Length: 440
Ligand SMILES: Nc1nc2c(c(=O)[nH]1)N[C@H]1C(S)=C(S)[C@@H](COP(=O)(O)OP(=O)(O)OC[C@H]3O[C@@H](n4cnc5c(N)ncnc54)[C@H](O)[C@@H]3O)O[C@H]1N2
Ligand code: MOO
Image (cartoon, rainbow, N blue to C red):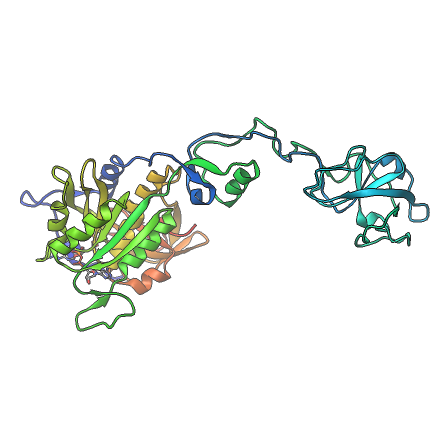
């Protein structure tokens, strides 16, 4: 690794310049002002990825009735005592029980009912012989692999004994009425939603997924696929950030690049305010001549007294950041991220993801951090916490690409961020570092 020459790292705080915040101070300030979203009643599939806001208690048993776990014959077990292929138990088939059947034949001594998987056990029957244990009603006396079509007065030969309760799924054996099946705070994934459906819940009380509006600013931006003129670049941040917001559990809306024009940006923000639980912008937070983001954010209608605070952090990349609220009343929280693509993404991971996870009411709001061995030398600016892109595997991490914050190619090849602490300017090969894992 080479030493850093990023301009953002040469500055320090002087009496003339505002103080610099640490990463932890900035995060604490943000999270101190963010609360979980109030719970609402959601349709099951709308609750995917949400946290439960109630203890869910089953109103009924599951399974709700004794039923067969196999396609076969429901019978009285004593009738099959000692049955073999040579000396099968010959039973009269008294009816069919399909899944969903409500009228059930009674099974008496010497009788059997043809039964399908999931169908209710008919009265009198004590066990189920899978069709493979029978001749399937073919009259051949040979083990069948399927059941013959029903015939009046049909007989079935059972080729081995059937135990009491064999192939019966008992009522309440999975869940008993009154059981607490999911605790408040549980994350609702596919299996949890399936369980809610299984116990008959059509809706559930959960914290909704936050609606996150992502917009990128900059007159140099064109939308991907459009012609890129001189000095222009494709807007990538709004894609990275929208995808990252979805990945964190939000419902994210991407607003394409907004030009550096205060009135336009203000009007776009005002349009989006009613749709958002959180707004993320990228670009325009540094010290450039076109401070339209700062101007627009301060002048959004109804935002008097609230506003967005712009600050500099002791980190690299991601030094310039904005955080506050815009709009009427309590306002909508807004994080203004730096425009450099790597800075924007790392800022998202460190600051925005925990906000989304907090709004969701999730227990795990941060990415996991692990300790890893680094075979390479690392260098970092004094007084900055550096987040290098890296590849982590089997307890070892290696930097990917350089430290500059425009390197989107390297970012896409990384699976982690290597943290070099503020006080460390050089790490000898073979040292250990903390690593933020970016994938589950
Ligand atoms: N004199 C100083 N210049 C800069 C400083 C500084 O302290 N003093 N800080 C640098 C650092 S660090 C960063 S980070 C950037 C932050 O700049 P802005 O947030 O104002 O962002 P822009 O100037 O709008 O853009 C920076 C860079 O990123 C590109 N960009 C912007 N938006 C997108 C997008 N949606 N997709 C892809 N790329 C984007 C933009 O074209 C610029 O190259 O300021 C440094 N300068
Ligand atoms: O280093 Mo800036 O801090 O590129 O985000």
